[in-house]
Image (cartoon, rainbow, N blue to C red; front, side, top):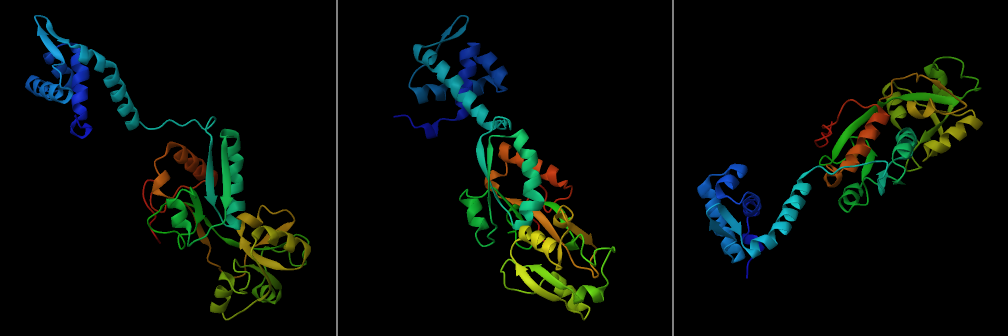
Length: 313
């Protein structure tokens, strides 16, 4: 019994060339081998298929019936192998699959919504499933195929994942457009600290955030009276009360009915990354999707190149 593990793919290439050329010399020239090398391969082919395969004549060699039977299957095998080595083609207009994205409430509005506006006309057959970011489960979700992309910060992204920097976000002070303090370009620090404020806290319990860290360094504090877990709900709260909030600029500047002021103190912003797994890194469809996402966000810099892994900063 012949074992496929002993059959060299180059032997099939040689058999194909011999069947086409009907000459050991011409087959050697076509393959870039020496004539003795091709003769040696023919010997191994005869052993593998237990058949002479070719008979010598005055005009070269002619295939046996067994070799003739092999001609079509051998060409098909070589064509299939060649296709495996070629980059997969991708047509977004006809593509049909589901893309799973993990995003925070902020990233959903700041990144996913404008991304979907670009994606839908170009790839109507791609369905998108949005799920919350669960830092402790992201790696496992990537590995089992439950997740294709995650929108995260460098602090939460694992270092062995591929990533690209989408943008750096800054904070602004948001309040309703007819708020008594909405007229100036910024609020004085004293007045800011005296106002009742709202805070986004994913735990829904803490009354402390990056703004409070900055104020504490300056020996000041503010009055946070409401915490909530949703950036989307915060805009409605600000429009209907006298509360103010420090929020990411991309959310406040696109929110109707809100005024945007510069914070009275320097508050460190954050970086948003697109993160993905090696499983989809080279897939043509996912590469196209990531390129569209990068275009949407206008990102130019990388946190670890698009072809590399995340470099933690």
